Length: 200
Figure 1: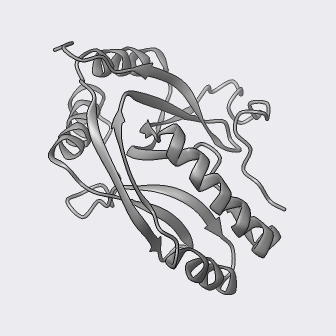
Figure 2: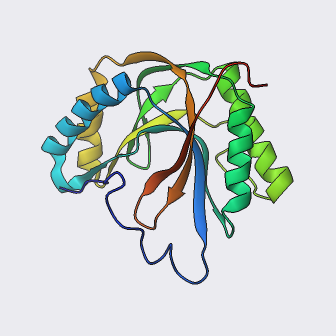
Figure 3: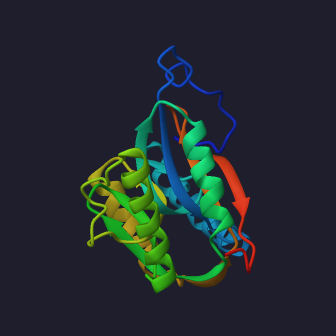
């Protein structure tokens, strides 16, 4: 079975080469209850599809998709500033969805707080670091948490049938943010920091 491991693998040589190029992203970790529930669904998908599917190990709601940088320190500082000025807010996840690229995801309901946070991150990265949004990070952006990546059309069809009948309805308070880093093999939570009320 092809499984995307959490943090067990070593950083790849691609990450540790002399150029020191990094890929970062911003995300919200899902709740423990939601995590444990989805793991069972992921296991069912693995059992049915084997090597035709890869489960997402670091379950999260994406705020900013991956972008390449040379120096980590300014972005670590930005992340810390973002956390210090963001209060906890409610998140609701309802049902499954599917991207044409063969991706199964949990559907995240867009709220004003979620939309404002994503827009702030995009704005900060653009004005402070010259990092422009990816083409799909415009007003069409759909909040989601990836469950699995499929590698064939039959597997994608089976996975859609498997999750369509599943009840998925979670609400939780976003109490942390993550700075994600791509090792050359997988995305890991490079930094995770707690949001505290009344920090503005």
